[in-house]
Image (cartoon, rainbow, N blue to C red; front, side, top):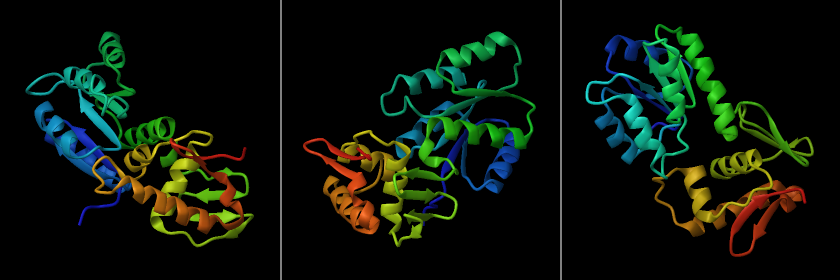
Amino acid sequence: MASSRPAILVVEDELAIVELVSFALKSAGWEVHAVHNTADAWQYLQQQRPQVMLLDRMLPDQSGIRLLSRIRGDRQFNTLPVIMLTAKSMEEDKVAGLDQGADDYITKPFSPKELVARIKALIRRKEPEHAELEMSLGPVRLDPVSCRVLVQDQQIEIGHAEFKLLKFMIAHPERVFSRSQLLDKVWGDHAVLEERTVDVHVLRLRKALGSADYLVKTVRSVGYMLSEK
C-alpha cells in the first residue's frame, strides 16, 4: 500500500548524503524517494509528483541546472518546489540556480536540522495548504495538525476526502477552481477519479459544514470556491 505521507524526491549521487538526508526527512515525517541521476529523476516525475525536490547541482549524466531548466519549461512541473544542493559556495553558482527557477539553495556541508527548516519554510511559502498553522474562514476553523474542523467553536464530523478538500480551499479563499484543478490539487495528478466525483465531495462537505455551508460557492460553468461574500 502506498504511503499517504507527503513525498520528497532527493536527486543526489553521493550515497552518504542520501542516507543523511533520508534519515532527517523521514524523522520529520516525510516519505523519501532517492534517485542518483537526472534521467531517473525525470522518469520518477512521470509517475509521481513530489511535494518538494532536493536537486544536486553536479550529477553524473548532466547538471542539475539542466534538469531544473527542463522542469521549469514543462507546464506540468513548472511550479514544483525545488531546493538546489551544491558543494560550491561561489555566488555565481547560487545565482545560476535561482535564475533557472530554483526556489532555494543550500550549500554542502549543511546540517539536517537546517535542511528540514528550509523545506518547511518553502512549503509554507509555496503551498499554504500544507502549512501546520490553524486556518479559518468565517465561522470555520481547521487545524491541520489535529485534523479537526470547528464550526462556531463546535467540532464537526467530516470525512477524510472532505477534510482534504476543505483544507485546500480554505488555504486559497476567494479563488475559483475547476473540477479538474481540484482533482489535481487535492487528490493528485494520478488520482483515478472522474470530475463528477468532485461534485459528490462538495455536496458532502456542505452537509458536514451545516450552518456554514454557505461558504462553499458554486460558480456556474466554472467550478467551486470558498468565500464569505
